[in-house]
Image (cartoon, rainbow, N blue to C red; front, side, top):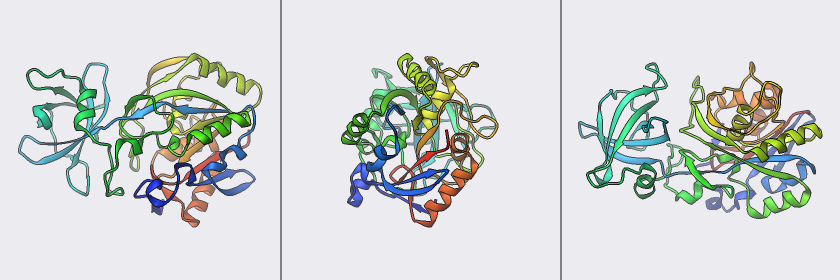
Length: 340
């Protein structure tokens, strides 16, 4: 995106649901506000939202040679280690690429973090699997440690620090996302009630997003998700009634599409997903998508195209750039509604 939101809309004189929203359909583009969302969804449509809450995943520390570092805690692995990313502790927040296995970092409170191996394999340049050891007498609870010592992850386009509450949505319930599932941020309680009153059904999934600022050529990493049985049933009923299943974000899309069986039905599932949606794996159940605006080079766009098609996504981005929509987590929104 040409323009980026550097602070929350509440700091720009707007309500959360007052951000701009481009509605992209095969019949054309409509400029609206997020509060207008009920106008574009029909009674009987199903809106699926992510209940994952953002954690305070960034912690400052020092490398073994004393240089400062910022550690981004991405997600816990099944073997008890944590997947982490190392960033420069300055305004550039650039990736650190000269780390090595067995390097030990010192974090606040005497906690030690030891790099084990690159994740998911030795060719990776971003994440490390690392062990976290609290000082003698500590409880070793990393989630509790982050709650006391961490802060929200942010990048160079957000110069100021904002509280963790700025990175939560009205749906946030279960802590676990290193970075905010930002498509749900513009929803307000009043807007949710307006949608329900209109006859739109709302159902939850949970997908804990890891570090998500993907750059050109980077594929999405595996993430933990859960699709409850009632949500799976509602998706199947909505599709059988020829109504639209709308995902509030790429995280929701990835979770739902990871729960689709060979017969095309969605079933309850709790697992890790490494699904990569794109031209060779289009969406099978999601028929509409609410999303923010991200860099066109990122693999994020392949997922949008898997739902809405290349032509509609390209037209939406061209219109957004022409009319000065703001990108990234504090920016404006897009509602993609391809033909059913």
